[in-house]
Length: 510
Image 1: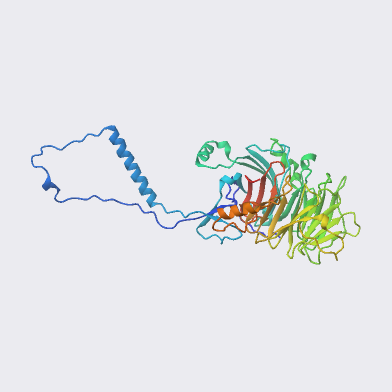
Image 2: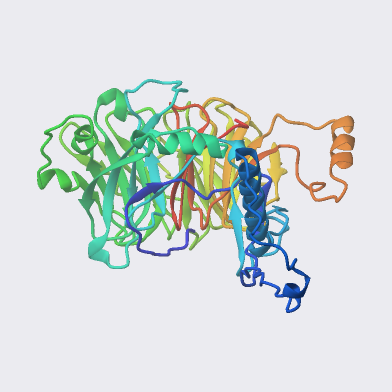
């Protein structure tokens, strides 16, 4: 279950300090700068050796070449003295999240810009536990720069009355600069800095989870559901807020800042699980709470209706941590709970009981992702730091049968998994975030052969990389990362939220 934290920041858009696989740690050197001083040496007997019959001083004339040479020598000497006075830098070393010791007080993490195609960090007024990317009509497969994106998020403010739902547009997102010459050229262009525009809707509570309807761009109705700390689920229509970014003069009234519907079926019990149906364009969503109840809400011709009878099937007292609709079956969804089970349900069942169940972990199932490309693949991330890929065809209804094994499983992270998501078009690539402050990109199709393993050992004489799985493509460092999403219309682009803002980035590996 996500942990909360709050920290006030100004609203800015600036380059990020996120990191990649192969990040370097630099220690700040200690000591004072000392300038070397040179004094004059006087010879008290110098006059005794002067010529007595010398009538006038000798004048030496310097030509232009001699003057230039003296100036160059003076400059070189000054530069040498300056270098000596500067503190020595420690040699950067590889930072491995699963093995490296915590950073010291004088240590900082520096990103390697050469492994990012794009890297930006956005600081909002308050930290956000959850966000969702808004689909737009700017086109798919957008590979050029600068880039633009829209997203919606809910805050975790220090005081309840300061919370808000924030709709954001980011534009002028540029390619990462890799050297000083590029940086100097970019600084001469005032239009190169990222531009942040936002619209806010007031809300009284922290937002635990927020999701936008996947049909928003097609229907031009941006319905958004936010699960609040109070246990109420608010449904917002943020269409005018989204449109206002690109339609000058749009007026947003007070009524537009209020929820169009509030789901109170959970009776004030807090929850974290919500998902919109990818099949019902008018609006249908599932919500789950920490007591194990799951409610289905459907939009009718004139109003929203929530089923009075909840779906109940996780162990008594177990929280429903995640809900995911099937991408191929209109009536099927999966739930993950703090009892360690994945349950598969059919909303047509009058019993409101799970049809299939499998123990996925001995700890909580925190998050899940149903593949959009392979309908029978489901990913789950767990509280013990492990995550798995499941082939739902191996699930069975008979509890006495041998439980199925995951199609793939990794225990590389040593802290709880906070988010997991399949790539929108590449069926083998998965993004996974963890409480160890990392977002990792994995490619399950990679299998290292004996020659590749031998070559890696030769290149890695110190053995630093011998326990890193070959499927691990990339590591992005972000403090207190909570949630990660692929951008469905910009290939390879990822957004991730954490305690110090939202990162917008693209690795050269994907």
